[in-house]
Length: 118
Image (cartoon, rainbow, N blue to C red; front, side, top):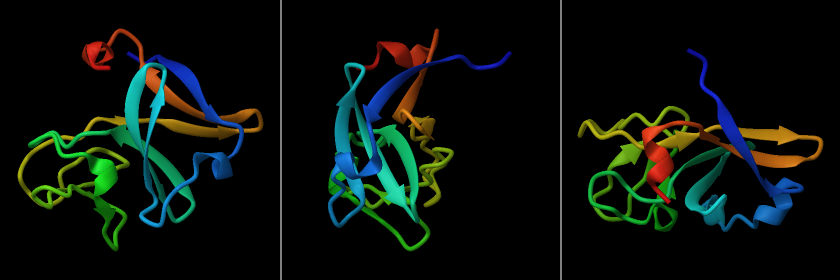
């Protein structure tokens, strides 16, 4: 079954997202707080909290491979697929992004368990 998404506009262009030096920023879109990551000119999105202990991922950093690193316990996650690459077995919720002519969008899956998380 193909996943269906509700798309929410983040900005007209990437410069409006105002990424700090860390290239990680927290934004609220569609009533949800998300973490946006810019790595090698690729925009990715994930949950704003670490699934291990609830650390604010926007306060973390990107490692040399583009993984987001939690500031609390240094758990690392691949933002493209949510895999925990440091081996602890957790999964980070990720969201698809699209850069279109009419702006930059994030998709939230319809009829999904995570819809109640806001």
